[in-house]
Image 1 (cartoon, rainbow, N blue to C red):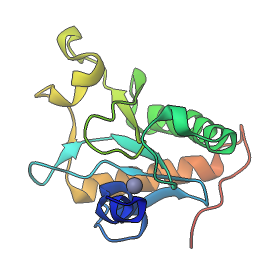
Image 2 (cartoon, rainbow, N blue to C red):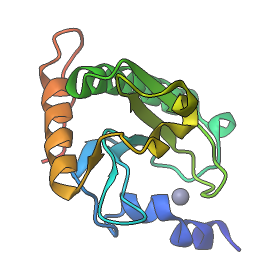
Image 3 (spheres, rainbow, N blue to C red):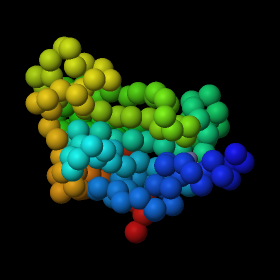
Length: 163
Ligand SMILES: [Zn+2]
């Protein structure tokens, strides 16, 4: 498969082209990076606050990043983590790179909610049966709050959001 065919078939590239319905819309986008909420997979809801940060360019992992991409995603991950912690009242924010399915780098950011049993800490947080789940409406509200927090955060310069 050629590189252009791989990009054509890539779920993440399709998302960046606007070919997938995104609950909550785009949280952040510039020429290098893209952030949005996780899309519900097995039903109408998803673990609330599960954000995904992706480079715009199609490549599989952390290793292939340029310095510019690494700086951009590192800064966005830090700011999104702060926003997520405040907006969800999480006790901790996880960041994971797994890459078991889609060969386009994507960094998962997940809040760990207070009261999460120790057995569900780490990559299993979304499996906790009592974890907050969001439907499209809840996800949209949370994404709005995260965007608001990012644009008004006085600790750093405001993000430039797409119109
Ligand atoms: Zn891709």
